Figure 1 (cartoon, rainbow, N blue to C red):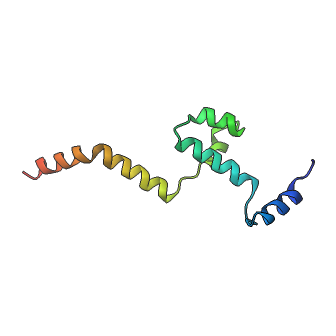
Figure 2: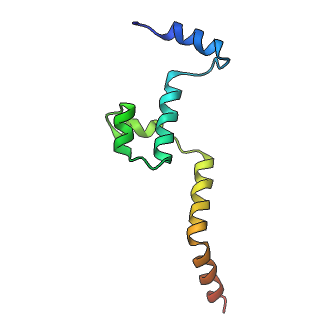
Figure 3: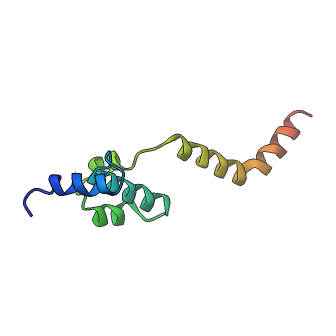
Length: 90
């Protein structure tokens, strides 16, 4: 197959997701691997990206990623931070 765009348009139309592109799958794969703690180098090999800069375009940070990071930090440091804050107020 030399040009898949026509076939892709038919398939995503039949699936009811006409705004879906092949790169959406690649992007989702990159994001899922990084969020699953798979190393960037391994993820790059799987997705076929040769450089960090190109791979980074696919690993998009969203608001939910920031909220998740904040929750993880709070869970890890919450007790310490609460202890430090209470001792500082004395």
